[in-house]
Amino acid sequence: MKTVLITGATGDVGTHLRRELAGKYKLRLSDRRPLKNKSKSESFLKADISKMSDALRITKGADAIVHLGGYSVEGPWEGILKANIIGCYNVFEAARRNGVKRIVFPTSNHAVGFYRRDQTIDHRVYPKPDSRYGVSKVFGEALGSLYADKYGMEMFMIRIGNVNPAPIDKRRLAIWFSPRDLAQLVSIGIDHPGIRFEIVYGVSGNTRSWYDNSNAVRLGYRPQDDAETHAAEVLAREKPGDPRAEMYQGGVFVHVEEVPNPAAPKKGKKK
Ligand code: 15L
Image (cartoon, rainbow, N blue to C red; front, side, top):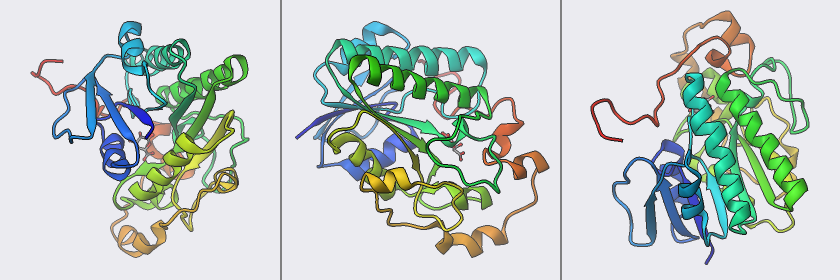
């Protein structure tokens, strides 16, 4: 059984992934926050990936890495720089030094959020980030490309839409990614032979998708879910939003300056 390191494992996506991948891989989890409810088949290493020594410690001996760690929304530059740029560099570089070839990097729809909603885009489009967060994801994609070409590493970049048990609004009807579809695509990223550098979209088989996800299909992805089954109830409660947010795929990320970081330690609690 492969040992798969999941960084940022205590976050929402990590929590879905742990449940969906249980029994398929030996899961080594890491986060700077403590992990509650660890199962017997999981191990946990507390780590701050903005420190290279921590990144080296957690990546040692892994067969593959799913690098979820870092800011998952728009935030202040200092936080994005430390968690998403330095943290990403440290994890990729530590993997290289420790001989871990395969990395699944959940990039984001916000790497291309300034494409309009009436456009269909594929994995070959030029990035159009909608936020500092989006820029940090473009950085991760570029770093992955460098490490694939220069060091022969195997980089699987998933531009994730929104992982949730069900789509939560109109925009998410296009970019919803059900937990079981997430697990299927991450497993392709871990196991598919002969990956060098690939970009795919992390979305379910949504009728309203604005992505041409043929690269994922080529690699074997067969989504089980379609947000359309939730469309009537989602649209019934939808309220008109900011016109800029309505025009672009990235939604509010195209104009907000900050969104509370779900990964931040709670105020008054020790890091
Ligand atoms: C993302 O990239 C975030 O990680 C997630 O929290 C959502 O905000 C998602 O995009 C989205 O666009 O809904």
